[in-house]
Amino acid sequence: MIGNHKLAIQQGCFTWTNVSDIEAHIRGHEAQTNQQFLIKYELDVRERPRVIKELALMGISAIQLMPSVESVCKKALEDIIGLQPIESPKPR
Image (tube, rainbow, N blue to C red; front, top):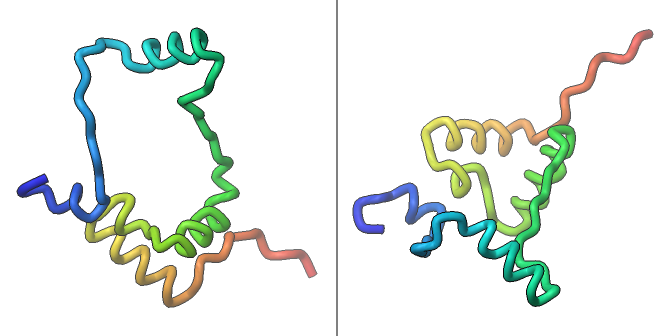
């Protein structure tokens, strides 16, 4: 982690293995033990505002997820105007 400020901000942790296909290895272990270790979540882009708000409640912001000048600016903008879904104007 020395010299990698983004990793420090993300509070990242990495492990090392000599298994060439770690996902297949874990899936095989799941089948043997009848337990689930890997779960894949796919979120609809329309859920973004709600997810960002929930992450904020946990103290997680775009700055921790992807530290950059852009994420700092996005966070500042969201703090100022609030994160609201953009909808088409309703006809009058």
